Length: 407
Picture (cartoon, rainbow, N blue to C red):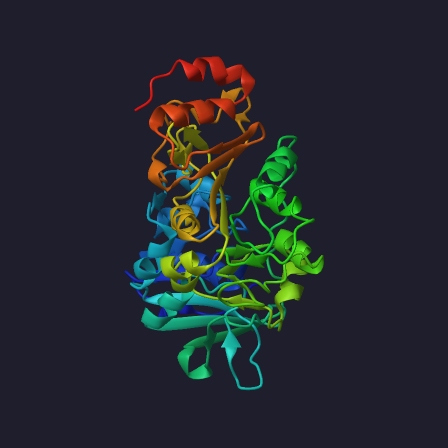
């Protein structure tokens, strides 16, 4: 839905511009910024996880793009050499975007108190809003009003644009043959009453899909997805036994479809919070049986994780894995999990040496899971870790890995 506005009064040459990521992207505002980029002068824009392919390499002729991840349509920007990657932990993003001059947000219509809730994400937007000179809001009457999310009052909005458009959706990843086995292994590690954190993608979805026989699970995560709503609707997730925020599913951003959006709209059992809350180490450790489930591109024989680079291309992110794994390690009864298929085509994803950077140190990795089993690395020496990791590699690669030197 195109909007006919002139942004030159609000965005100035040299400005640092931030907008909502994933389903929270205020697409009409972003599209207008891109259309006016030559008139606005050179600005810098910070990109999060893309759901739509709004930003394209050709837009870099007048815009400097910085992003923390290489997923989705950001891959085309990386391939074209026009996305500068910020390789920081997810918990550092609020401080990073606090330099924002302009922030673009998508809001739900005002409530009875005249408050415009930022729809679909709080994450780092709260920090951007608090620091920005200018706030431009798309008020979309199809956007959900999620309790707990940051809200704005009219006096904090410098430009308000009213729209009526479907919110961008992110549909489930296709199934793969190894995923049910991975989900089954992890389900056996999750006790009833545990509080879950999970990432985005096919592996976390498979894990959530395997938890249907559990009871009284809770959610405190960076994201909330359709797969989580499925567990809520089944009565598996009740949040009754959470140590903090009992009765409430907590997340920083919503990534899913209309089913998710309808579920959260006006629902007091869901709360969107900023990264400073969802990734706070003391809060994570305070949860009883906090189970962190994150994925990786590859893991080496000592437990080091590469979650960023595959085939020489930046396709992932440092993300929040380290924070969540540390929280789970400190939680009473917690389990810090990295899960991944054992192979990608003919290539082993359990490797003797990473082909990319160390996104998560081996000192923070507790349990590694593939379709071939579980390697609990907690308390193991380096030689013991190698034996455990070789045992969960694909059988075709085990002999070669067993002979590799570890460091």
